[in-house]
Length: 98
Length: 192
Image (cartoon, rainbow over all chains, first blue to last red; front, side, top):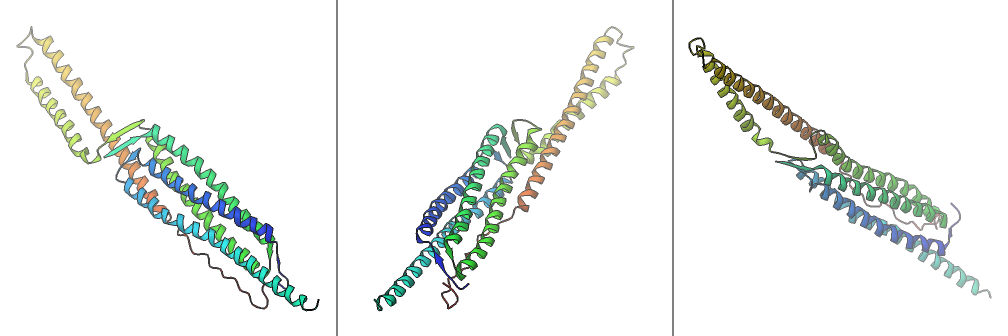
């Protein structure tokens, strides 16, 4: 690709939205795991421990997923910084001729 | 020991279903944002990023599926045990003791019936009616106990079958692991 375009305003909005949904996702996954654990209060058998173990294993993913979503934002932020730097350098080069 | 309250279990399952549906929407919104970001950022890096998000979406869909599968185990528990009752308490470990106790009672009634058969009713003519009545009474008890034993035996077998099926379903559950996001910005000559 021989061109690069960044709409800083809209990409910043994507960052905000992503942060919002990442938090929503984390909260929602926590609630689902809690709900699945609550189900085990009303089904008690030798199998219950295995179900709870499986839910516990899943819980590790919640924080990892949150970090990953926030990582997308870090990338967007780096892109904005890079493009701002490039713009600044270009501006400075043209300023020399003015 | 098995202790199940199906009415309360159903309530919890329904709540989980609602939250999973909400989560599905959140996940959709996350990937809509990622798609949108690739409109607001277009260069060589964004092309690679967009391609990577395709795998991210697949991973998230698997994650969602694994949650649905966990919920479906509870659906299966609810549907299977609904055929038995609303509240179920059963100690599978005492199956042998319970059945042998009933069998013991059945054997006792068989011995009593044998004793009745030995009585010469022609000799005790006036008591014959009473003896026959008592003998029939024991016969009925014997029949009832046999039926009870068969029912209990079937119930234990049914519960054991359900529990085995639940265990198989739990063992079939996938353990999805979230991977790190394998992506790095590359500000070489052809990018950015």
